[in-house]
Image 1: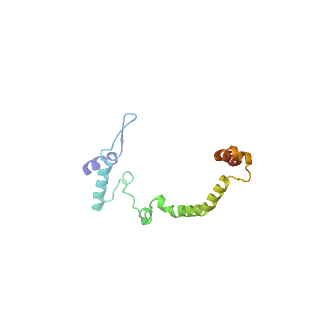
Image 2 (image 1 turned 60 degrees about the vertical axis):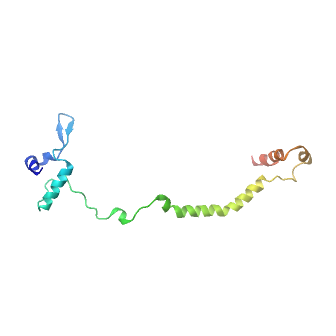
Image 3 (image 1 turned 180 degrees about the vertical axis):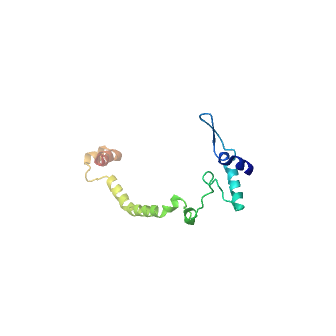
Amino acid sequence: MSHILRRLGEAALQFRQVGGSKFLPPIISRRRAMVLRKEWLAEGKEWPYEHIVPGKPKNEQPYNNGKQRGHKRFAEQAERQQKIDAAMAKMPQMIADYRASRRIPWDAVSPADKLLLTVRQIREKYVYKKLK
């Protein structure tokens, strides 16, 4: 591969245009060019085609500073638990309010309705209409 690179130079590493719109891949692939670059640098030579085939960029900092990101559900678990606890603290009062709204006000029910209507009919007449 190095003999092709010496003979053709930059042209061996670049895409070739054939005709008007067709492009052919480079004669020396990216992977083989990286191998050649590594060999050149091991011999102490300077890689002259850095602008075409640069080396892999050095990563000064490891990914995410070495911290694992984790799952979203674990990050939000404490906040979610606080919301649940706040809602559960309100629950006895909400249940009491619901039961009070569904209770039949027997003192408001007329005696005729008590005799002629069923409990369900009384509930529809005195409770459900009030809720609408």
